[in-house]
Amino acid sequence: MKHPTSTSRGNVIRHNCETGGCYNVVHKYPIGMFHDALPRNCQFTDFDAVTEVGGAICIIEFKSDRARWPVAQAILIERVTRMDVPGKGLANVGFIAVADNETGSVSKFKRCANGKWSDWLSGGFEEMHDRICKWALWVEAL
Image (cartoon, rainbow, N blue to C red; front, side, top):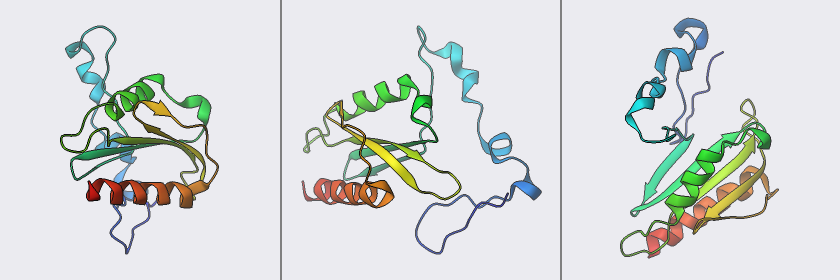
């Protein structure tokens, strides 16, 4: 499988699995090696996308099925969105989206702000994109 490249500013994986091996095997660091470094049952996680705009954080996690959504990631997003951003208040946001990895289509998503999740929203990629744009403009204006 060859991952797509992009002519836009987007960060796209430029890796050919047929010639370079499985991306996750070759490039993904085994964060499980740190399992004994943390107290209790705490574990490291990764998110599909994280960015910072004006000191505020936006986290995105894509899943192929709502039933596979790890509780720990939801809790972490809730806690991050309850963190005060100096001079901006509660400005961090998180999204969980049910998406098709091959087509990039989003069938539904939830938004988390101030530690609270919205209901499932069915606006698809365009609606999610619009909400992220509005968040970024709002954060920049603060």
